[in-house]
Length: 104
Image (cartoon, rainbow, N blue to C red):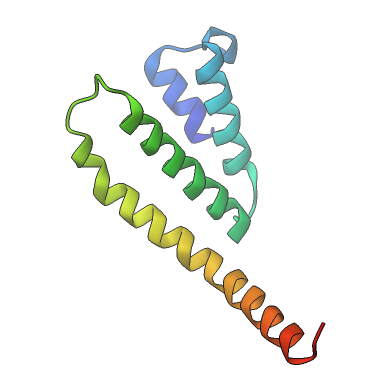
C-alpha cells in the first residue's frame, strides 16, 4: 500500500473524488513524484521552484502573521536553486566568452 493510501485511510478518505480541486491537484503531483523510480535533478528543481512560489505567495497575504518565519525556508530553497542552476550559468558565461573571443 502506498504512503498516500495510508494517509487517506488514516484520515477516513475513501477515494480521491472526496478531495476538493486543490487537494486533488496536490495528490496527483505527489503521486506522480512517488511513482517515479528515480528523481531527476529537473524534478528537484521543479519542487524547489514550487516551494519558493508557495512561500512568496504567503508573503503577499497581508493577513498572515509571522512572515519572518518563512525567511529561513526561502533562503534554503533559493540557495538550492542557485546551486542547481549554477552549472547552466557557467555554461552560458563560457559560451558568451567564446563567442566574443571568436567575434561571433
